[in-house]
Length: 258
Image (tube, rainbow, N blue to C red; front, side, top):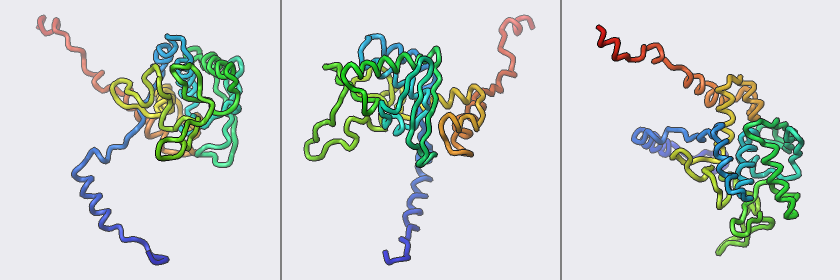
């Protein structure tokens, strides 16, 4: 296009409008399936075989739920960014989507049900036994060898090596060989996304009465963001409303007496 000119998009908008009228489901917004605290039995199932891949999965579930991180934040974390103490985990972030160029240290207090400290330390200690003390926290685990990847995968036929190298892709939470339903599989009969743990933690907070401001802080959303209010707080409040509770339960004995 000549400088200062804009392309004519009127035909595109017309065709798009016609398509949306004929395809109502195209307007439906695809959202993450919230993995709430029902992830506890999922973690226990992952650990049942007492294998490293299960240790990683359970640690990843506990951390992802408590961290409320965006998918790219989870998979970009390095071991050097974590400090594990007896009752909490400190996570250092150079920046995030909301805090560009602003580093922060996030405190994750442990819970009796998540056992975040135990699960994360077990996995990190296992990595250390292999001499892995730096680089990405979450790695693909080779099922046969029972070891974690420590070098970039070989170049693919007809193309270069993966741009992510040994860092997992943000579209996934579990690598190949995962032992539990997780993003990439189908818990409860529907596909799951990497943001399911973020959605699950936010949903539980909303159901527990967290305010918009508390959710913004927990998930590091921008102040005044509509996402916590419209996707977590409001839906959970609506779900709690049970109008048919006003209707008496049908009692066949009462009708017989009449």
